[in-house]
Image (tube, rainbow, N blue to C red):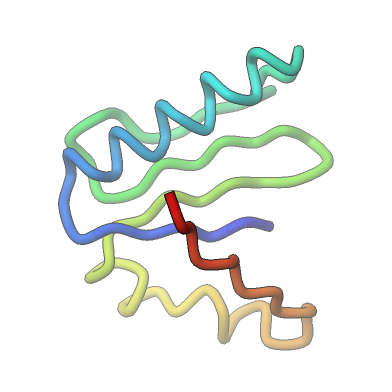
Length: 81
C-alpha cells in the first residue's frame, strides 16, 4: 500500500494523474479506480499494490497508518529536483 497526501484538490489531481501516467508508460494500468478529480481521496488498485492519494485532512481523520499499524512503514525519500 502506498499512501500519498496533499493539502488541496488540485494537488491531489496532479499526484494521481502523474502516478497513472508514469505507471501507464511502464505498461501498468489500474485494475480498479475510485474517486473523481475534485474529491478528497483517490484509490488506484494495481492488484499487487494499492495507491491512496488522500487530502491531508481526510488522511488525518481516517488514519490509515494506524489501521495498518503492523505493516512495515517505509517513508518516501525527499525529492531534490
